[in-house]
Image (cartoon, rainbow, N blue to C red):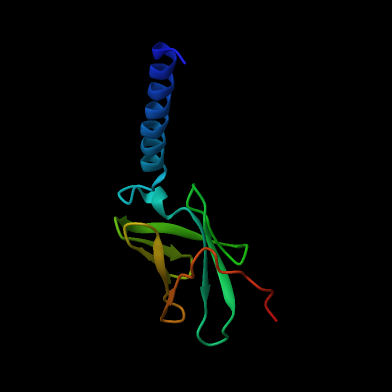
Length: 125
């Protein structure tokens, strides 16, 4: 192999590594942005032991078990977003630096840990 070809292969390899690290950093959600909370999250209720799904859409629509809940964003910061439903109850999602970690439901006065994303949802009885 010619020295020019070797240099081109090495340069391509290094560019690929640097670009992939840069893209990976960009893929991490920014906790200072309220869109950090967008996604689907599973939690298990204490009383019925059922698994529920809460979904926050990019326009901040909130769905629980695929049912829309009329809410407005009352507040948000780096570690939480608080919704106020049309009955005056709060739903608060708390997060760490990486992802949402718990859901507080004021109607039940309960906080539920968010299950890991690889948790398999089974059909509710």
